[in-house]
Amino acid sequence: MIAATSEPIARAGAVCARLLLAAAFLVLPALAHAAELTLKPFKDELFAYPGIIASEDGGAYRVVDYSEARDIDRRDKVPERRVHAKYVSTGVRKVQQDLALKTDAGTIRFVAVGKTDGARVITLYLHGQGGSRKQGVDDYTFGGNFNRIKNLMADNGGLYLSPDFSDFGAGGTAEIAALIGHYAEKSPGAPVFVACGSMGGALCWSLANDKTVAPRLSGLLLLGSLWDDGFTSSAAFKRRVPVFFGQGSRDTVFPVDSQEAFYRSILKKAPGYPARFVRFESGTHGTPIRMTDWRETLNWMLSARP
Image 1 (cartoon, rainbow, N blue to C red):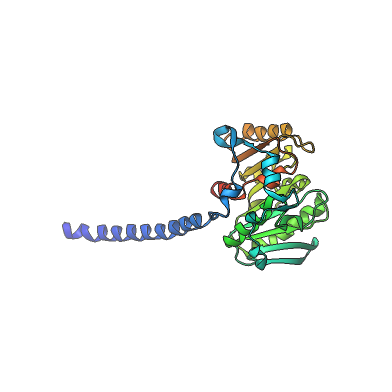
Image 2 (cartoon, rainbow, N blue to C red):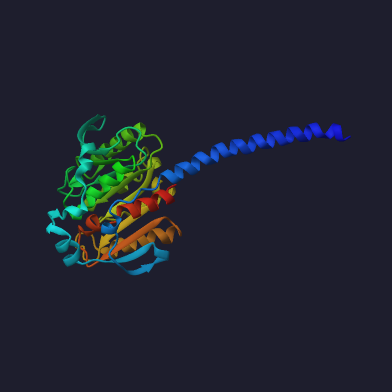
C-alpha cells in the first residue's frame, strides 16, 4: 500500500515544486521592476518643501510655507531670471537634443533629455500660454526646478520631453498624443507622467480621455493650472491615474479655492483616489512650477500608479 501511494505523492510534490518555481519567476521580476522604479535623490536638500503649515487627508493635502524673500530673492542670483549655481548641474546638457518628429498630426518640435530608446520612465512638461519648448528646459529660471527634472530623468535612465504644440485644443492634444505614442513604443512599459503648467492643463485633461494616451498614463501634474469637471468621467479617472495639484494661494489666474474644490470633488466621488494637493501659502501663479518637489511627487506616483 505504501508503495502504491508514494508515486502519486511524489508526482504531486514535483508539480507543486514546479508551480512554486514558476510563481517565483513571475513575482521576482515584478518586485525587481518595482524596486528599480524609484528615482534616486538629486539635490533633495535644496528642493524639499521649506515647511509644512498644515496637513489634511492623511497628508494628501498640505499647505506649504512659501516666502518670496527666501524662495526667490535669496534663491536667485537675478530674481526670476537666474538661480544661484548650486541649484543646477548643467552636465545634463550632454544628453539634451532639440528635435523634430513628423507624425500624422504634423511635425512636432521638442527638446528631449535622456534616453530616447529604452527609457525606464518618461516625463513631459507642457507649457502654458505664451510659452514654448524652451521653457521646460531652461536650467536657471523657476529656481532651477526644470534643471532638476532633467537631471532626475537622465540619472534614472529616463526621458524628459518639453514640446511645442499648436494650441490647447484638439490640435495640440493630437500632437502630444502622437509624441507620447512614439516614445512609449520605443520604451515599452515605461510609466508616462505629464506635467502641465497653467493653461497647459487643458491638454492634461484632454489626454486623460484620449483613447491612445489614457492607457499609458501613470500620473498627471497640474502646476498652477485649471480644473475640468469632466475628468471624473474620463478613462484616466476610471484607471485611477494619480493626480497632483500644486497651486499658489494668491493665484489670480486660476483661483486656489476653485482648484481645491475640484480636488475635494474627486475624493468625494471616489474615496481613496490617488490625488494630492499642495497649496503654496502666499504663492502666485508661477510658484508651483518653481516649488513643486518633482522627486517626491513622481516617486509617490510610481508607487500609486495603476
